[in-house]
Image 1 (cartoon, rainbow, N blue to C red):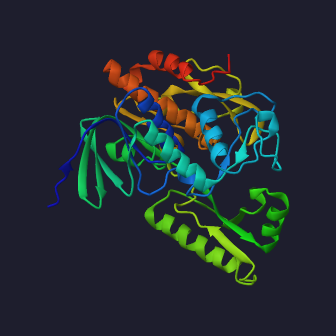
Image 2 (cartoon, one colour):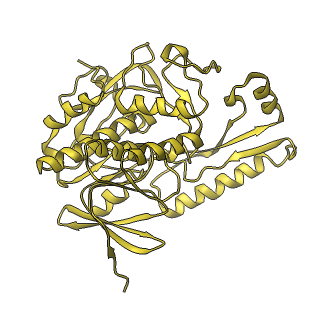
Image 3 (tube, rainbow, N blue to C red):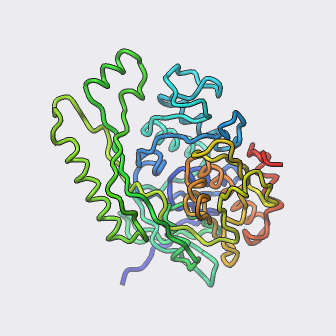
Length: 386
């Protein structure tokens, strides 16, 4: 029988080092809480970096109105500050690189952004645990008292006061017993490649976006339903076969794949059923929400503005478990609105601050919104819908 070795406890444990997890950990650490971030890979950023979806979706509404600030704006500045970008000049861009639109968005270097995330978390006192798989929450009733982790040292138990699930598939919440929903996904895959022509264009322009090219693949007409291990592995294998076949008849001396994704590029896998579910419907546009954690636009539409409810971060039956990123309670268009980088920043920041407040107040995460909102506002979060 394998037993767990008990390790140092933390105020907050964040599981998953994607954008949401990084922002949750950073936000909690800035509230003077001890934070452990558990990441199964060896680089931070999730789909945005090691997943190669290196586009920071818009922080604006497409009509010239900035909808998001706080950590979302801090992260876009971090991304463009460490590597190439094509941020429009009207939003403070200085690269001079060709822009795809006038929206407050940019392409960025997935490698340098990942390194910058590591740097900012360490400087703010977050403990990073790489190459470690968080397997199960240790629970007493519906209270999570620790997280079991497996790594090169064996099976370890890290006690905590609050846990934040940022796994992208609600692994911890699901195994703690939180009700969840699953999603259907189109089957797409992207790699970053380059070739002789693109190298020449880069040499002439100095624009790195001309060198690092996104090559998209559609893997068939069918959508992926509930994602199981078998479904996921079939998707991964077919993605690689499709990629190899695509380049079979090209000149091997004039092209190169710069990077393959290090995790499945499946947009939505599993999320909690929370106290509230964000739907992102047309009737929700410009509708104020009493318990808003901040405002957002919609990267796929102009002139869409939404408030995000605090209740999508938790299920009220689980007093010390929060979620952020792609696993928050959302459905329909709402799930697609909240899955992108800026909203992962916002839900991560809100979850990190909520974790800190819950610890300070010794209350359930369901009972602290009135203390969370002013803390969010003081940290720069925008509440644009009046």
